Length: 170
Image (cartoon, rainbow, N blue to C red; front, side, top):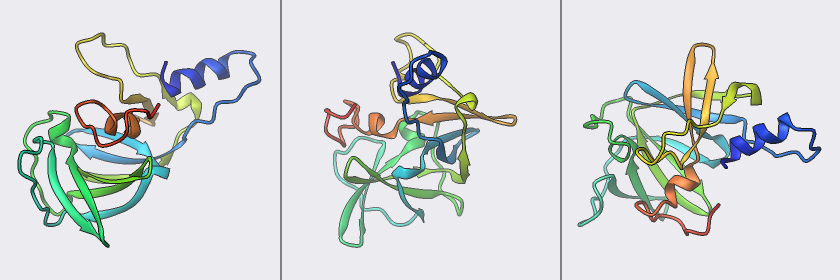
């Protein structure tokens, strides 16, 4: 059960146990879709700059950058999510994340804003069977007419194909 499903189930029951859900998300664009990641994981937002490529790295790992003495792997989320060819322009940004004590950067098409979502604005991720891996999707959020795909960034970074974090993360 995802963190969001647990929170919704808990809030809908008479159980007095409270689950603390993240409710502030940094929203960003990949193609025509909007995504959100927990704002507390975001360290900084930078313009897309020169990246040192690493030989034999998976296609979605663009390379590394030196961020004030820390070597940071950079993941292109458009490539990772198979959303077509990435084009880099003046709106392309790198979101620097601090996930489970590891600094990682993700390339996105653009950053929108920071939004707060109430529990009533969040829904569990749809069950799509084994065809599509939705393990890293925390849920879906709605703001007015906008639909946000809420990403569990720790789960994504620790997935077996990424291998950027320790597999013991929940």
